[in-house]
Amino acid sequence: MTELARPKIHQKSSAKNRYKLAADNGWAQRFQLVIDDFTQGAKLYRLIWSLAFSDIKLRYRGSLIGPFWLTISTAIQIGAMSFLYADLLQTNIHTYIPFLTVSLILWGYLSSIINDGCTCFSAHDALIKGTRMPFVVHVVRSVIRNTIILMHNVIVIVVVFVLMDVHPSLYMLAAIPGFLLWLVDGVAISIFLGILCARFRDIPQIIAAIIQVAFFVTPIMWQVATLKGHPGTENIILYNPFVYILGIVRNPILNEPLDIVFITKALIISAVVILVSLFSFARLRGRIAFWV
Amino acid sequence: MTYLEASGISIDFPLYHAESRSLKKALLGKVSSRFSVDQKSRPVVQALRDISFSLKSGDRLGLIGSNGSGKTTLLRALSGIYQPTAGTLSMEGKLISLLDPGQGMNKELTGRENIRLRSYYLGLSKAKSQAFEADVIDFTDLKEFLDIPVRNYSSGMVVRLAFGMATAFPPEILLMDEWILAGDAAFMAKAKKRVEGMVQHADILVLASHSPSILAEWTNRLIWLDGGRIVADGAPMEVFKSYLPRHDFEELLRARS
Image 1: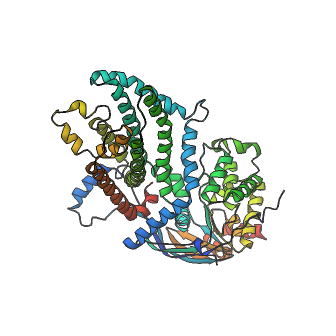
Image 2: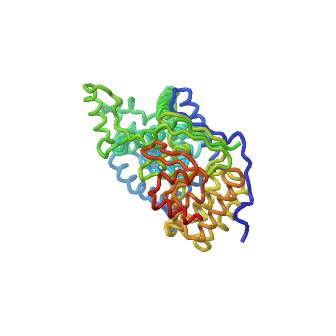
Image 3: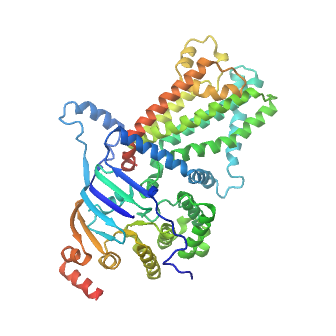
């Protein structure tokens, strides 16, 4: 047996281990705490990654093909819906199936980021109350977990594109900056909803209901072209923030145009989300541990 | 220089009843509160009131008090988990808090996976995390249990794992709640040896417990909390003299001699 009283490694203390936490006193301190939260969270990237990864791994522990069930269930859902809705909406199946596949998968990603964001703090109350950890860890964990799921579903998109003879183009790469914006938005909205839902336990249900309605009023199962001329459609498109957010990633993948007005609207929506989230995080960060 | 200082820390705990936590209540409450005097008249528990003390290297502080006196809340505040409602916490030194045995552990993951997660949390390099893992495995003595999910562990095993992970790299400040008592006698001896080693390195220990004998043995300063306030602060035996019923105190004296 080795000597227990004197463990082998001793870490030297340094000034960076200095820590001070005072009662809430104004915005300067609040934003300083937010900055600290982000910088310390960034240092824990390995922890965040393995927490997100273990979430997926645990869900499928003991399963033969593991997370590829995600791929299969998405493929089945899309396969079943494609033919029905292509017929129902009387559209060309060769353009409709790729459209539906990309739309459903991207929407699934957005909606589960929002729904998981609601519980990103309250689901980890033991961790929050047990140890001092940057709150952003829980938020990014939720976003990364959903991104890993998305990566499994991308396989379905690739297979559908091959089957439907959709040729890849360089323009598709324009989806990348849009996707990076999604990641930032995802973190922002999760922070905001996570705080809100920790305080008010009814909000997750309300959000889930809103997302469900948004699914139907956003062109996911139907294309704008199919409903051209239908009264009311234009307003649904014009005032629906999800149209722009979804579009900045979906349009390049489907080889549809992205104009500057469209991009600007997506950026404005993102800016609002980020600002609201940042201010509420600064204001309420100290209360989260009491609420979860 | 390692130190831990609480100056005038107060914590108000918001009280949310199952109903008052709901959105409906809050919205309706806002409407009706226009008629009330104070909009901020939210129900709170005064969990801690004006707690001040200062610890330096070598101090081993015990916290004693009845259930609900604020021991755990104080440990959480000292860990930096709860932002105080008033006052300031300041410290220097690597702090680890052992508040709840399962804390920071994912019960579905195996012991080994939890150890790895912890080394990521500590931000260790590859070589260091291997040393960390080896040290925890050696200390916890869990053997084949390391590869099964933590939810199948006995409570004593969970304690061993949690304690091993918390002290593998000796923290400069260690905060512990009373669940350490869940270990068996052999583990207690091991744990004590480890904490003693830590304290010899001029570190700080804060231990909350209901057990006078453990506190008398492990600490050299005792704070008696009641209703979130400090009632007494001094050498353990002095505080015990007023805290314990006469009979129990004499028994403790006899056991100590």
